[in-house]
Image 1 (cartoon, rainbow, N blue to C red):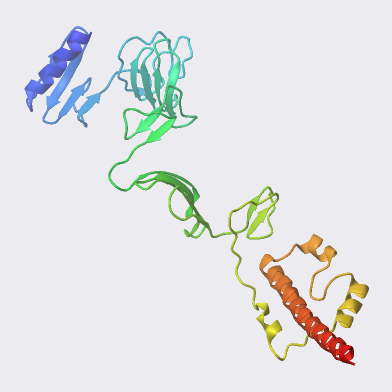
Image 2: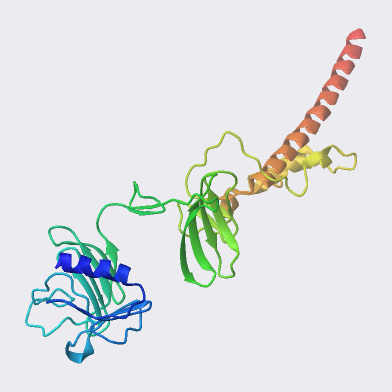
Length: 312
């Protein structure tokens, strides 16, 4: 069979545009005309047109035996292959399309087990080793290499402009998430800056109510907070209305806390704004400094009076 097949290929290459008919005990080439070659037909309409007299006018290319198997692998007495176009190398490769059978490419191992399948109407899968795009030496399940400067990318898209792109370029890896309007809502880079620009972010919580909400401990070597609307330098202004210590004592007795400082209940329910709280604490420190200055002046006055009394 193989010798006959090779003989026909050599003949086709040498024949050019000559019209001819070739017959063998197993294969009949009806027409070689210009750029078209027909097997089983005198009017080829493609580069290679193969036609058989199978029932229901089904066309097929057969390589090897079918052993009464249909395209779906079921055994039985089938009059012909349930497909319009068929290529099969037993226990190796099967291509089926159209007709009653599904359209798919099936590649198997030596034991006949399915390893690669692309199905136009069902599930497709690759179940053999790693898969490479742009590389002949993949080292992961899916390994994509692109060296033209644009970087390698995998894009997941549900609707128009609803997408996630996982990529890598000469600088490193990047994950790009977009919203429904085609705008980038988040970028996570293995290099340079990363950012989130949509919704709240939660760590340790699935329902964040702030831009960044952490349910747990945050540890950092430095922490920078945006300054509150007003910084308490106003305490040292001449027109600042400093409460008397008696007023402060009364407020403490009535409320159980310093003026302008939130209560325990408020902090438990709402938390604290670190920038604002730092400003309030500094305000109290500055007020305490003024009280100390006042007390020091009073002490100096009393010391002076004691000295004067001592002279008498």
